Amino acid sequence: MANGLLTINKFGGLDERNGFSHNPSLSPDMNNFKVCEDGSLKKRCGSKLSNSSFNGSVYRMWRGYVNGILHFIVCAGTRIYKYDFETDSFVTINITAGKCHHIFGFGNAVYFLCNSGYFKYENNIFNLVSPYIPLVAVSCNPDGSGTLFEKVNMLTGKKRMQFSADGTSTVYTLGEKDIDSVLWVKTDGNETEGWTADTQNGTVSFTQGSIPKKGLNNLEICWEKASTAKAKTITSCTDGMNFGGNTDTRVFLYGNPDYPNYRFYSELANGLPSAEYFPETNYTVIGASTITDMVQQYDRQLIFTEDRAYYSYCELRTDALGNYYPSFPVYNLNFEKGNLIKGSSAVIDNTPVTLSDDGLNRWISTTVQDERNAVCFSGPISETVKRILETGNADNCCIYDRQSTGELYFSTPYGLYIYNYKTQVWYRYDGIDAIQFCEIPGRLYWLNKEGKLHYFSEELTQDESGAITAYWCTPVTNFGAKGNKFDLLSVIIDADNENGTDITVTANPNEIGQIMNSQTVSVDRNNSLLRRFFFRTEIKRVAAAKIIVSSTHETRKADIKSITFKIKNKEVER
Image (tube, rainbow, N blue to C red):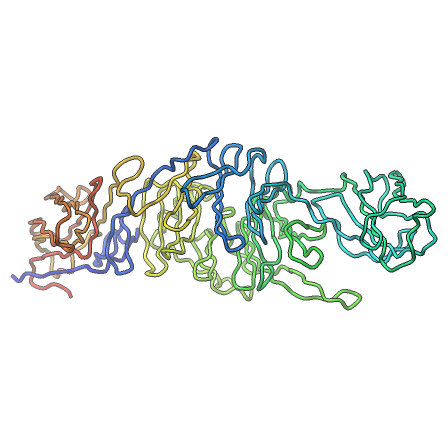
């Protein structure tokens, strides 16, 4: 009988459906091994607990560029911190804002929606936002009649009106009665004196000698009626995105528990993009279900509920006077699939990814309503997805696109599942119970349920909790042998030994029979970067077998380039 060799030099990753198969490159169960772009196996790097002293548990992270500068923000306890890249430490930027619901960057500032209000961090200063004061009417006559201009801002009770003074009237009527106060009176852009306010009737009276001269919109009066503000409607939102079509000119928010199916969005303030102006009419009711996420694909905004999907885009419309204005209408996209994880969708290669009832889906065509515009790609981890859906654990999952490595992270209660969308293979890590990820140059941070902040580092070979156990196993297979019985004589592994190697090979595990052999090699780094290791198995006269390759050493790695199975049989399939 002839000896045959079957070599795997491109590993196909994890496929839970592959328990019994003639394809040993697809593993039905692998853990803490990464499949690299060249198809090799590499034991994952370790993670470490951040040594920063936070004022309580960490509950939120955000990273983004503002004015071309990368910001990394962490919320913990009652404080908000910023990462200092020069000192590799977190510094406190606020101690009074309280719990933060949502963080986003817009324009020149980082904005915070918090329990105690709406804040921004700009030029290293953390302050309450001073909302834009809308010009609600222009070309007004002294009696208050005129042309409506800007909508009321929900963030504030302050408003402005511009009057075209007639040069004789001493009393000018505002748009509201029972106001709190008049904040300023300006003529030709300059604050003026010689006036009194009747807050009950909402009027401003000028004394003789101070009567505004005749002009066009030359008199501006600003007043406040705090009871008309609806700031909580905005500050109670828990998620959102910047959007405006081809440019991000507006902030879109959702997640207000009192308005779960509402989408609120900001407006231009005096013609400029602003995150400080939310008109009371700038909202859209999205069906009857809770909005779970919003993401951008090219010039479109995709809006998801648990079982449906919609799309929106910037559309120019005309008003009754023939003036153009931007609108953001909403259209149906898919009535069968949506997103089950709140605020945790991702976009890989410009295609949004959501968890739906049938698994993880890529939204590849979002121009028309069509049930085929969402394609499920999580078949290889279908058993895990089924378990998540059956136990109602979708809310305990999160999705993150690690663009630097081309990996989609799918964190679940049953492990961290990773889809490498460059090579289109899956693999799994354990010991990473992440609920949020944030990556900065050279370091990926992750936050667990207990509010502890960790980070991955390629320099680490073990986790905070200790050694990492990595393993990869074949399906129950005949290794390409033809006939009823074959002998598996040995397993040959080529590994990169630059950082030392620790590998154990176990043959015929208990689930299909008695353990026939288990051997370990563990060597330090030597001058040979690539080293070949031989493991004698001597399994004879079997119809199928299963091999497990594992590594547990605290410092030595396992970077496997290929595995060869030596089989004794009449013929081996090539």
